[in-house]
Length: 303
Image (tube, rainbow, N blue to C red):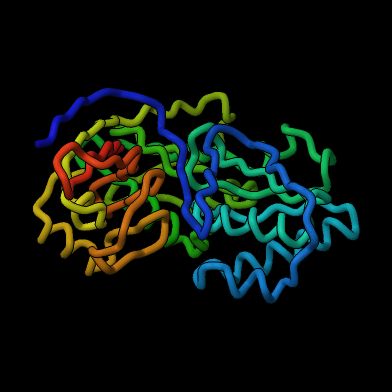
């Protein structure tokens, strides 16, 4: 039996399970603690990184070593939480507590963030925040509503790469606010002229003008026979198991920002499941149910 309690709440932490369950905070640009440890070989780090993260991890480690040796400051382009977690772990393993990784995405709960790499205590908060700019895209979308995908498609259509773009906050019929790197704010101000059929004006605005709506959150309590992705996903996204499995097999589903194509994948507390077009689901808690062979699952869906 499933009971549902709907409510509004700020976006919860994004937790990334990558070998160990280390949380990636969305709260603010922050200092990543780096306990002292013997540095590891870069090739060892790369072998243990997720395949899709190896290129960015390699570049991050190269920059971190340069920062450590030359006392410079380096900033990486926008990363999703999974890639950011891999970068944090790699820099910590190679450079120990000599180098810090600080992440910022333009606002407190941003998912995609830029990572600034610097020697300990050599960068201030203002400098970190300046690595992300807010581009306001305005037009009359009253009769031709545009989605996140529409705005992203129009932006990428100007020829820039995905890593130059952070979160996109859609503001309804008015348009959207887009987090971008400083150089892209200037470029898109002239290059972005339309989204779908609507002509738009893009201009940089101060971060203080950014208003991020609180996401709609639904807490779901469900009794399931297993903790598999197909079981919890169908319960959380409110669809039949066969329909959810079809989404999984078509590549629409990610667990901790990594594509998973098997419904039998086991989930744990802290995992984050996203389904294209359906939102995001956080596994808050899993406990043995009173009835033998079942699990009491607390899920949180972000719509």
